[in-house]
Length: 109
Image 1 (cartoon, rainbow, N blue to C red):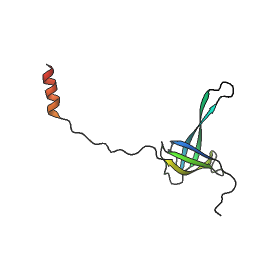
Image 2 (tube, rainbow, N blue to C red):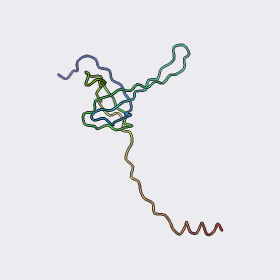
Image 3 (cartoon, rainbow, N blue to C red):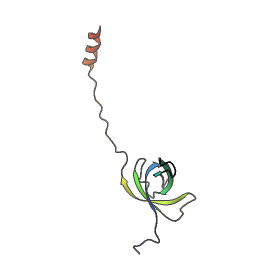
Image 4 (cartoon, rainbow, N blue to C red):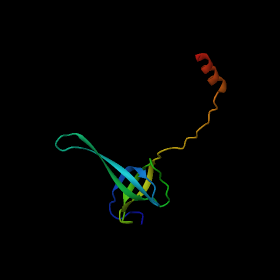
């Protein structure tokens, strides 16, 4: 059966916590207009989503879909990674120039 049962909601949000085992907290931002004043209101909703292999990290943008209740607060499953968050950057140690530091302090006096 390739088709899923019913129509399941999907949301896109940012992983805000990955400290639990097989669970991530996804923050979904909703932007809407105030009914009376017309001002843009930005709201954030947090959902606990199932991550079976602990693959997603803080900062990743993921798509979550609704599922059956998996625990007391977990009713969503991470379906795919939209965009990776932080990439690992190698830090290169730059050796200090000992002659340049001594020369600058000697010329100041």
